[in-house]
Image (cartoon, rainbow, N blue to C red; front, side):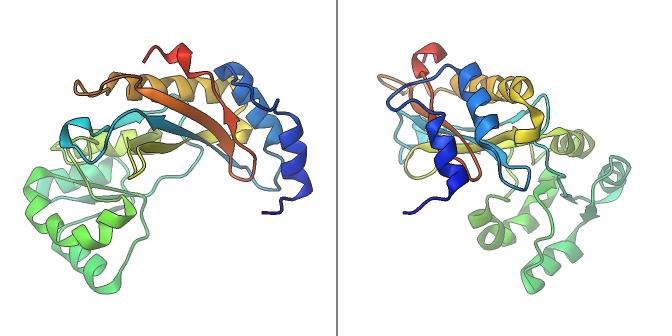
Length: 231
């Protein structure tokens, strides 16, 4: 695959075969993020677990201290007082049956996070085929199935992100934008990595954090020294 000049300039900043400490890695990531738009900085963490086993699943959510740099559109499925609370909290969309029908019939997906009260889950279940593949299905583990919808909306707007394993046992997550600078990106990285380490399943054997790479949207990957994470 042929890369552009900016990508190749970024590669020159990375020492071949070196595993970097987090502070060095985020610093380099910021320097490689030279596209005309504000690139997202992502981390890719490979875990020593087998996601095919229920007792080795790693999934949860964490509020990044500096947010994600992205405006988050929330949809709350609730009724009565809970719907009123969601509106007061500033949710972009609030409703019940009518919004479920709109998603089903019109394939309407103008939102980034779906939050639902527990009593709505029977209805929300009908949206599994639409929301599931897009990672939008609300779950108690991610704090998006909750009676406290106002808190869930506030957290989503503040930069709460969900982390989960893919089929190859890797977690892919954003930790902010290049414009944040190295210090804020490292604070977000520490919060996310701390949550992933804490979520280590009891059934895990051997090394938990196998590898970790940081990269901007258009930039090369920077490998981290994972021995520092103590897992």
